[in-house]
Length: 208
Image 1 (tube, rainbow, N blue to C red):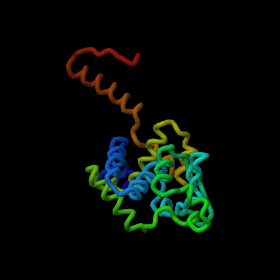
Image 2: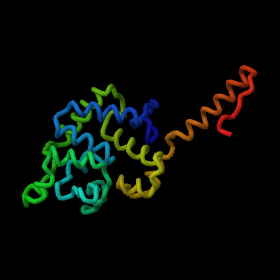
Image 3: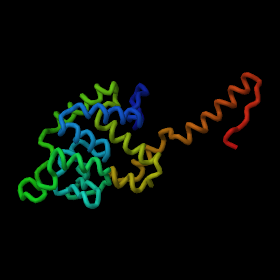
């Protein structure tokens, strides 16, 4: 069984279209559930890491969210992940992050008050609404999708490793095996050549 496919060959990651459908489906959820789904999708973080987020670690001025990497053997390892302004606006609108940061008690309390079981059910509900099923219909599917999209979008692998909280670069390199747009274009050129050979009809290389 591979890292990105199960033993039946099913994908464990979402495509960009599927991720968009998931985010659209999340809009039908209660505000706190939607903000949780959006934070998962835009950070590529683990469920436990997002659930541990506190208002103190939301830095709107720097446009980053600071997460503790909970899979490390020692605690207190943090990473900053840049997030879109719209997500920061959602966190402020739904959770009142700025006000909470000025409150000694709320500042260090989790943004979301539900646990892992509820978090998983929220994600599953949005996936079902988006007609996404199989092993990719999970928080891990969102994490894989984040990594693949970042690499295919030209983000240096060292940054992707940092954002995901990987200990080894070899773990991040696994995501480079997924076919991207450039590989799809090269494959399309091959198909045109093969189809031309089958029909005895010479084809011009439009990419030349």
